[in-house]
Image (cartoon, rainbow, N blue to C red):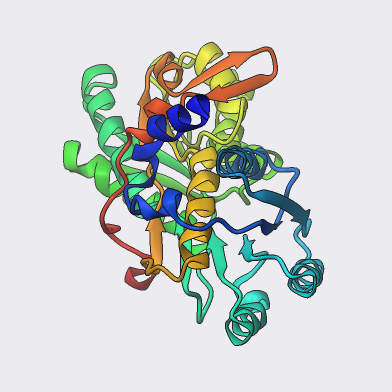
Length: 342
């Protein structure tokens, strides 16, 4: 009992949007989570955060993987509903495909929390502020450019224009960068597909056309790493280059910050924290408590090769989150910009 209470006290800052009733209220017995892509490091760590919080609160958590198949996601969610879970959490494969589930959950009075992406008719969603994440990383990139790149900022954006969230990150990055370097320019605005192979391919083609850049920004870790791999494959030195990643999804960015001299900034999105907060949101909905439509999960730039060490430790192939440090990162009260502003 003492250990349990100590853990709760240590993590109390995690839920700035959650009241104390979230840990004092009646607990759901079982929560079902349908993720969209469980083999991705981001979602593996979201699940770890959910498991940590559910264990602390004595809640049974069952996870199903849709594997990017919306029909499989709907089937898994319907199975959870038929089996009588107390709360359902879903990371949508796509927004339209989940609309009927949102509608059915409301009809049946089943609390439903969305993670990551909004869906029409939703009660609440746990997600970061994408524009803010890019913006604050851009400010830090501008400061770095002033000190190490002669005040020049020529950007290759390895983006993903298909999704509003990733467009917001890219826009935020450039806006934040320009607060420090007003004449910063985007030389290449690429569609890296959000995966390392595509990011490498499209970045290599862009650099062959015009290599006059000194900052690579990636909307996720795969994008920044693919961009850097293309730069290295071209035989260019990393002297005078800055790479900025986004996500902090797993071990990949830690390895890059440890070994690549240009990889100096990571816009950390703390997937474990997202999962932790989703469980607290589920508890609040179960107790019919009022929640905001967007529960903001915090982000912050990690600066320098050791910047990640404040928030994580690594033992071999296992990373462990420092909950005290992550819980101390305060979420924004309101996002600077959203998809409605695009």
